[in-house]
Length: 251
Image (cartoon, rainbow, N blue to C red):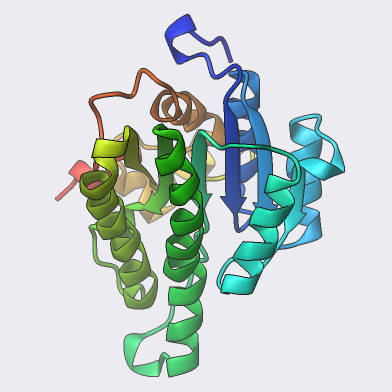
């Protein structure tokens, strides 16, 4: 991906926290190709290995951790601090999808999704935010679903977690703006990591409902992520910006 000089991330240190979605390797690759050093915190070893291969990194550039617990976050941050003295960029991509009728959702299922998607974002942002405040600079990008602002049958539990991340994004933008920290959300619609012919995609109702009549692919996200992570993202904060084929504009 060609990178304009004003979006260059050379000498920037990025943390990518991911639950291992199909977009995650592309997010890491976009940051890496723009010049950033990328430290990945993944939910399991296979997810971490996939990202490290994509960015041609070494094992020490990542760790497996449970970010829904304070101990997990502290262990991950200690591993990061063993490698780096400061951090410039945080990308929270910890979306765990969950679909079930609301009246059938158990309390433990509700708690697990809120812990995975919302509490993990809170805990990691708190720790990384301290480092950014000390430095007087930072860029935080929270990856969210379009369901942060839309309703869907069987989607209440997941949607609430995404709306919470969006509310956190806006609040941190207000609270940390004076520290030269920009906090934005990158929203995604329906994506696929596979090569699916358009005529096959358009057999699905959700694709026919999407104005651009196709699903997104991971490479659609990279350029916007690089901008939001760059110094050029200076007067943009507290905003959700959607890469969704126009889905959120649809009534």
